[in-house]
Image (tube, rainbow, N blue to C red; front, side, top):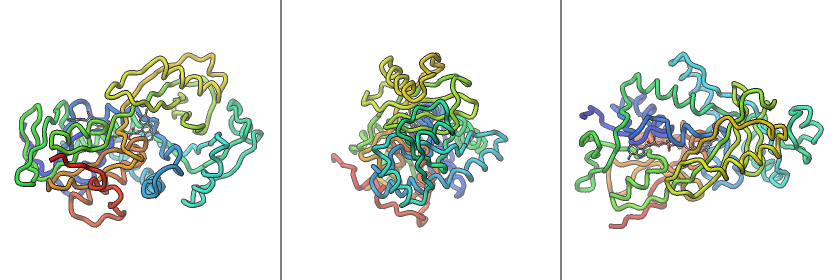
Length: 367
Ligand SMILES: Cc1cc2nc3c(=O)[nH]c(=O)nc-3n(C[C@H](O)[C@H](O)[C@H](O)COP(=O)(O)OP(=O)(O)OC[C@H]3O[C@@H](n4cnc5c(N)ncnc54)[C@H](O)[C@@H]3O)c2cc1C
């Protein structure tokens, strides 16, 4: 295959597609290479909550990035819906936090970043969500939203496919450079030259860097989700208790997530994962004990230390960039992260400080 591209993006998950979208909007001739179908890995599996699960635990720069990220969504979704004539399930359902041990942290975080938050007694929760067990009451965050990740990925895929940018079923097997300058990539479809390459390979990103003698601390972290059928229970809002969450879908289905497992590149579902999630769900919504699980899936998050993504140039190889390691927050962060990566590739001044996210902070060269 030959491409007329100046910039190649490796990986067509949400991070690669948002990066390519931003680059195309800046007039770059961009191509996305994915070894499978774009959007079919972690990004498809995601719960789609547009807020970190426990934002107060994140390092400061990531907490700040995450707090800004939700604001990007209404415009993005409106543009994609208008261009594609489709509906993407972006819904500001709000979120109920049940874990009273986290209330103080959550209140403080909401105050710091200007999110609305109010304390509900058990009785007020019962009025809002009659089926939900919340004996300690809840903290309500009415601003919180979620998106149906599968629909979002389809809409992005359609838009970029219309621009002729997507190249699927092509695996990148090597990154080439000469005299400290990137020259292109080796793929299952032949060699391709490029001025710039952005690695957005999700959980597999470190594998690509390894061949260059670089150690990138991004590892796969499996997450499983189960889904109950539409009409099984009535729930209007997202619910979070510890690391377990419930998200009502626009069609009435309910998803329950998610596990955090160090299982290498094994993306299979397990009986124990299913059991753990079902037990947590039944504790919150007892009626689910009588409802059969409708679907069960898993994906591999690109796990990075402290959840801090790597965005920016790789030192020592001019023209090579990373946009990866978004761990549990890739859907939320993708619009800002894609824009920041495009800013850096195009030599523009970004509207947010890239320093905390630069790969040089943690990447090790073995040469
Ligand atoms: C169960 C679960 C629930 C989640 N819930 C949420 C949530 O509620 N909110 C949120 O914000 N985030 C959530 N996440 C995290 C989010 O899904 C990820 O952070 C995000 O999808 C990562 O996107 P990505 O594009 O980096 O990776 P991916 O979507 O995995 O895409 C990487 C792509 O790179 C391609 N690729 C890899 N190697 C090569 C190669 N050598 N050549 C060519 N192509 C290659 C793959 O085929 C793949 O398509 C969740 C994740 C999981 C698993």
